[in-house]
Image (cartoon, rainbow, N blue to C red):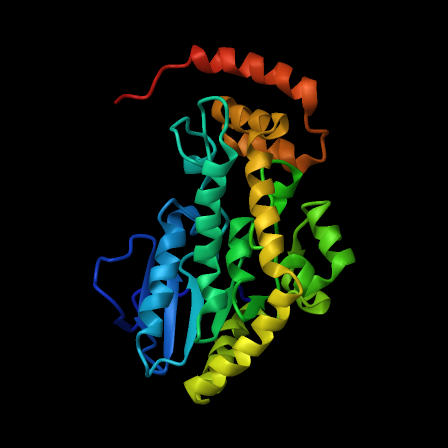
Length: 323
């Protein structure tokens, strides 16, 4: 079995100003000029999401939609994986103040909500885009990476790729809230009550994605789908997409996102979430994730508060980073 390789972030003619994007590239497909390719380009971090990534996704989608002759967008990742979620080196281990990582007390949930809702709406630019969007998923689309992939109209995934939202165990709630609308309630609960990952074959069987293929066939499958969509007039594509999106939104998607985004902030600032962040700061994120994913009970309530107090003392005695 041959695994899929990462996409080439430099293939094709740039769309938009060169140097406008730090975490991704946006280019016209060199093979089919009706196709745009947005490529996550932080392969050394498995394309993990930075503070800049959500806004860059929105601006890349907007840049493509300004080009009348482009018909479809393929979202893909350079290097070993599609996207491994938020970069916890930025969001978890550090102590710098950020609306979604408020170290001062008391925590302001509306400041958190406004920032995280902005990220959610940035990801949803893929959903709202008049031009259809296809996610090409290899290796991982996990945590925040799954949020992004599921905003796309079509997801084509490598058979062995893994998808899921592990932070539902502690320190997260999937803000784009697509799981129930794709899977139905019971399978959505299976994913969100366990934080388990599923492979591409299971994702297709359950209806989470449209197609799962062996790694060596991933590019051919994505290209065939993109070519077929690109052959249809843009106006027809926009109208059909609007009809389907309207149906899902009337079922409650946008209200679900509001609740999920509020809850995401709570998960990062309740005793369990603060324990996870403090444990990451003292022992490193890998150790915190190993605990989270091991099946060991996670400290909660007063037990978590007691551990947080101990960890705070350790953090107070740690050397401060150089200015």
